[in-house]
Length: 211
Image 1 (cartoon, one colour):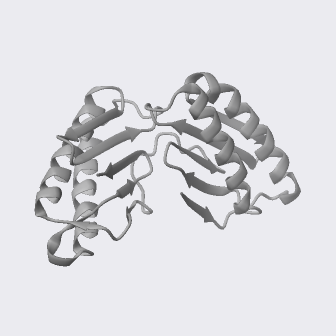
Image 2 (tube, one colour; image 1 turned 180 degrees about the vertical axis):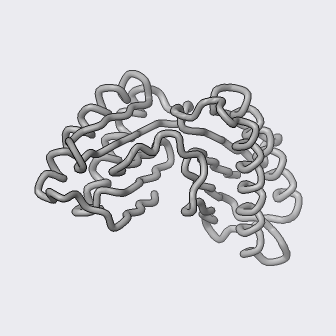
Image 3 (tube, helix red, strand yellow; image 1 turned 60 degrees about the horizontal axis):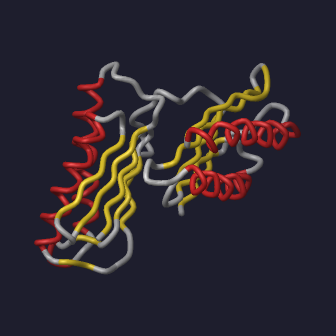
């Protein structure tokens, strides 16, 4: 789990909790059926935009449970209204501006998982499954999985709000971003070996690699 908050508040700070509650309720009504939802609440300069999405491997029931957890964590950003929460099966983002088409951003980063390290064979397998997952996601509506025998598994998922406009440019940037952050995780291990679990988070793409 990761939560990130940014220091932005509404002009009328007292309305933040009300707008957030309404926003989460609107999203929940959509998530429980579609595993995805967006909502806008508030008015004037105090508008709140929210988006939640579950990974495709979750059932509708599992997604609803995952979102229920998200909405209990996100309020810890208060009184800030800009925040994100990443769980293993779902994620949530809330902002004071329309962000739904953002694919890349200055806060993109990698999370290198636990300190269990594996040899170069695993690193090679990991590189293959990530490439497969990303390629499948690009061709199949934003979601893809990759598996290398029984040693490595990868999942890639993009926001459903991203469309095919400038798709080639986004794809190229995403691949460069993936490579750069993958090297960063490997650089933390001894003898250029890989971590068992990594997560790479960008504005619009989320990738998970596990053994």
